[in-house]
Length: 562
Image (cartoon, rainbow, N blue to C red; front, side, top):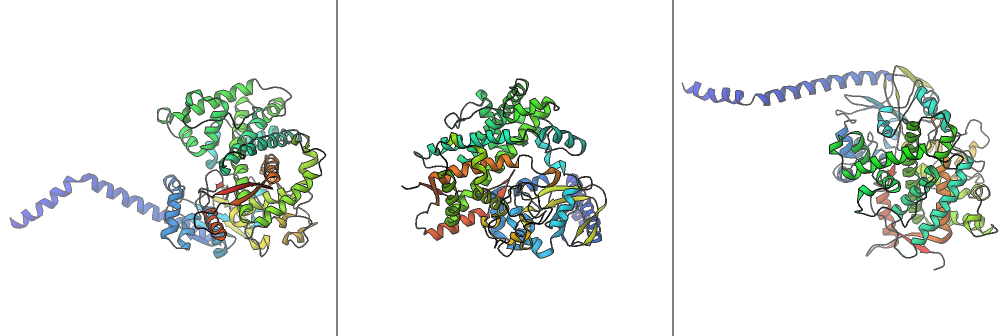
C-alpha cells in the first residue's frame, strides 16, 4: 500500500500533462531531424573540397534574421562575445556581414561554405570565381526568394530572372542615357542649392538632409514631379491626406517595415500610416503611367515612350529604381561626408579640383554648368565615390544560387558544388590585399586616379577585359575584373549606376564649393578622441536595404571663409 500510494501520484502527474509529453516528443523529433540534416549537409560540403564552417542552427530563420538586424542586439553580441564569436554570428547575416570585414576569408580562404541543417551557403571573395558566376546566369541564377518583396508594385528587372529578366532589360536599358543624366545633373544641382540654403539658419542633420536630397532628385528625374525642401511631410501630419510626394517619403524612409506591412501582414493588421501610403502611392503610380507626357526627359516618360512594357511592369520598375537607388546613393554620400570629416587631407584634395573646375567656368550660375562640360572634369569627386563604395560595401553581399550540381573553379581547381546558396562577399572582396595592395584597408581615393602611377592599380593599365560596371571612364585605374562589384557586373550590372554617380558628383561638388565638413567634439573630447568615437560608430554600421550608419556621428558644417 505504501509503495502504491507513493507511485500513484507519478502516474497521475503523467496523465495530467499529456501536452508536455507531446511537446517534448515533437522537440525531440525536430532535434533529431535537424541533426540528421546537418550531418547530410556536412557530407555534401566535405565533398566539395572547400573549407567550411558548421552552424548547428538555421541562420536563415526569419525570426533570427529579424532579431540580429536590430542594432541593440548587434551591440549586445559585440559586448558579450569575443571577436571570433561575433564574426561567427555576423558572417551569415546580411545586416551584419560588413562588420566581419572579411576576417573569415582571411582565416579559411577566398571561398568557404557555411553549413547549417537547412542550407549550405558559399561565401565567395575570389575575383576569378566571381567572374565565372557573373558570366553564367544559367548555372548561377539570382536568388530570387530574397527579392520577392520588391514585386509589391509590379514585376521588375531586379526581382526577375531568365526570359522575364531579358524582357525587362530589353525595354529598360535605352531610357537610362545621356538625356536622362542631364536632367539628373540639373535637378541635383538645384536641389543641393536649396538644401545648402537651409544650412545657413539651422544646425543640419546631414544624414537626413542627404536622404531628402536624393529623394527629391529621384522624384523629379524618375517621375517628373518636383519636390521642395519647404513642402515635405511633417511629423504627425494626417496620413489620409498623403499626396504622391508624402507617400513616397513614407515608403522610402521606412522601407523594411513598409515591405513587411504590405507583403506579409493581412489588410486589417497593417499600420494605417503604411496602408494609406501604399494605397496612395499605387493610385498615383497608375495615374502617372496612364497620363505620362510623351517626349519628356523623366524616366517615366522615356519608359512610356519606349512601349514594350505593361503599365504594371513600368510601375514595378519605377518603384525598384526609386527605393534601391535612393537608399544606396544617399548612404554613399553620407559615408563620404563622414570620411572627409575624419580625413581633412582627403577633403582638401577633392576640393582643390572642385575649385579649379568651377573657377574655370565662365559663369558661376549653376544653371550654366552644362553636364557635358563640367561632370567629366570632376574626376576626384568620382574617385571619392568609388573609394567610398569600396570601403563601405553598401550591398554587403550579392545573393546568387546554383539550383543543380555544378562546378566552380577556385585557384585553378574545379570544385563540385551541390545545389546551394551563393553570396558574393563584396565586403570581403573589396578589402583583399590581393586585388588592392598592402593599403587595401585604407581609405585612399587617389588609388583610382589614372594619373597616379604609384597606385597599386596602375599595374593593370592597358590590360584587356577590365571594363567593369561603373568604371567606364577613361581617367580611372581599374582593378582585376571581378574584384570590384559595387555595381554588380556582367549582364546584371546595375542599370542605374551612372544615375547615382551623377547625383553623387553634383551634390558633393555643391557641398565642397561652399562648406567645410568637420566633427563636432563632445564635452571634454579632444579632436582625436572625437575622431576615435566616430570610427567606432562607423565600425558598427549595419545594413537594411544598404549599409548605413545607425548612430549619431555629429558632423559640423562651417561656411568657407567664415
